[in-house]
Image (cartoon, rainbow, N blue to C red):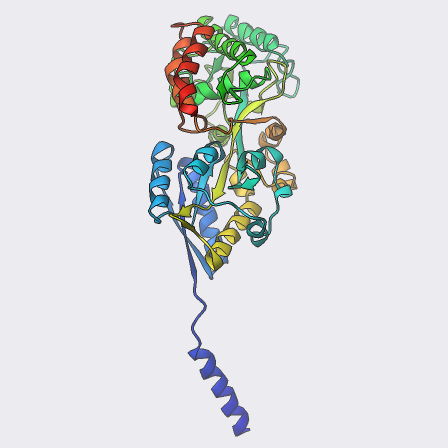
Length: 424
């Protein structure tokens, strides 16, 4: 008995002398504010509670140019994060700048993931020269919001309050004219005075014609120029007829819809929580819905981008070994718990979540989830994507053209002049 006690005591003391398993601290950077930020912080907190061996230490930086400038600078000197959020539309530039570390099949396996788990469009946007550089988290795209009450009495709403009878640009223009005649001040609203809103609507109308912004190293070359000019002229015609706001900044464009002064809104999926919350609190005052942007120009296509997870290079090195495995574990967990992220309006890129019962019960999310098949990501170039020269052109050239300062053809010529040399 004494021998057994002695052995037991020796074992306990021996175990106590062993070093405790080291906790992996994961430095995390994101650019998520507002509702997105709240939801992501909740996901991080939940992960940390479930995983005592890994702790995410998150920091939120300013969205857009400031974030990507900080990432580029920090990565170059080896002081970047272990993992970060990244727009897939910025992937080409991130690769050129040697910021992004390729995600291998082994990495995906460590996350419990494989490429086939994701929708094709975001995986394609994350892949360059056969290598995956980020793991898509969502698809966020332009959708068409509608005020069902303002459409009552028209052929554009059915008995269940669902949008109907709008399949072409002609159908849509007739609906807008009907609304104008009924006294709706601004039948259609979007961010007509900002780069993001203008680019998203323009790019949707361009790609619905089968147009491409960049082909074979040329900006709006050949037939693409005429298609781009047509898209701009359509947006200009809406403004001239008083169907859209003159120069609405983002907040004003949303307010026109929420106040019932616009029956339609072209905006991103991220505003879905805004209207859900207003409706829940009895502050909206009308029935609403949201759908995939109809194929106005003949082809199903809508501007889209993805928030993704990326691992930055650290100077000439990158995150490796146990740390990298821990990072991938974080990414895998986030993907499999993306139903919380879907609550922000986004379409999870991880198909198992989007095709699950919980997501299918979310409305209007489940209705517009079809756009995953029609998502048109920005071209994989250094001049396109969030906070890019193409966005600058949207603000400095397309927006003035919409206001009547030049026609679509002249605007396209100016865009080509400003952007072509930046491709080199």
